[in-house]
Image (cartoon, rainbow, N blue to C red; front, side, top):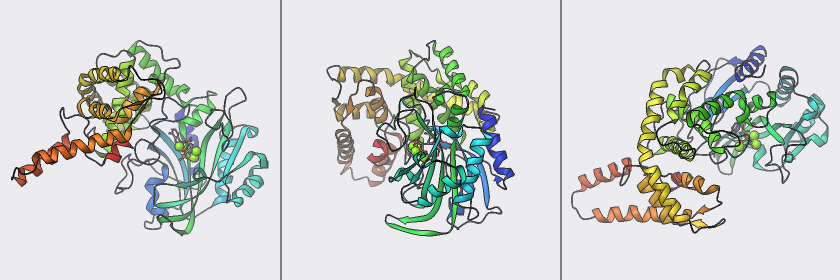
Length: 468
Ligand code: ATP
Ligand code: MG
Ligand code: MG
Ligand code: MG
């Protein structure tokens, strides 16, 4: 009962039996929501149901939602490959109440599924609550019989959930499992919480408020429930492994990477990054995002190029990542038929991007190595060079940062943004006075759209979008 497909159906069946409508995952590109880069949790497709703007024929729903946390709020890109629990693409299992049940029944439902449906040992579970939400602590004691020392009161925003700067929000309560004394790490809220010993797997959000603007919060007409359980994290627990990358699906993907690259994946961050980034790239392309130099397309490009650098680290000299796709489609195509439908588009897009980027990747990396060979741990790469890598060689800033991470060398970000601003200003002054306003406008639009020099990696959005 521990493969991802079984976990997904156990979850959905359980909530369906408990009166929830099973609703399909929404696409990764949120509809009509410019405030959000990608769908990053199950509640996104229900946002206007929570605020009361939209009515549905049901008041309880359950979903397995495709989610991407890269770019924008909730950006896990830098964590991937380096923590045991973060992916850029993952599936979030959720149950939702739209003004129907609230805290008490949400905790009852969750506890019963965790301890009976998934049969997790009670003594290894602990929960967090928001420090101002004593009601939740009392309910956990009453319903689950959890002792007070296993209820951790957290005063920070970690236990006050917000989807974005505005929208529905409220206190939340997270369920953790203790993976055992032989794993390093401390309970949530402790200084050692970054370790892997205590793994968060389910977040119950008690939606009570609507944040209209900073400092302006109103009570929702009827309080609601929004929960999210990471499917891959539950697989990790049920399969008795400590990292999502050791679960069956990732083991299969990493096995294919080993075959295609001819390098062992044991303890290799590169294998993990490639496996994760392959998934997020494939699912984003299947949902209509294509690599570009702006907005969502640029986040996709950053993900793809990061994966390519890691492939290069493993010795790849030609496009290889697209060769991993059939394994992914075989593993996930049944649950997500859009992957099968888009397989040739995904494959072509990966191959094209790899072919284009390989040309400059190698040259860029040698420039980077020349520029940093006298630098030591704790030093900074100058912003000019980081900008040149970005502008001429198509290196997204985070790729450069990732490339220097192992050596603990940082990047001078303000120097980078200065260089970018200078280049934009220079380009404009160069054109000033040509007298031909129309041509000028078109030129700038094209340049901003397709980028500088080699038409690679120039971002048109504000500098923040690049630095983010
Ligand atoms: P963490 O503290 O581990 O970063 P989170 O508190 O940011 O997780 P939530 O926003 O509460 O995560 O999301 C609900 C659930 O989704 C989490 O409890 C977890 O199981 C899962 N989840 C969140 N982020 C990721 C991720 N990057 N990769 C895989 N699963 C995730
Ligand atoms: Mg997080
Ligand atoms: Mg958390
Ligand atoms: Mg959480």
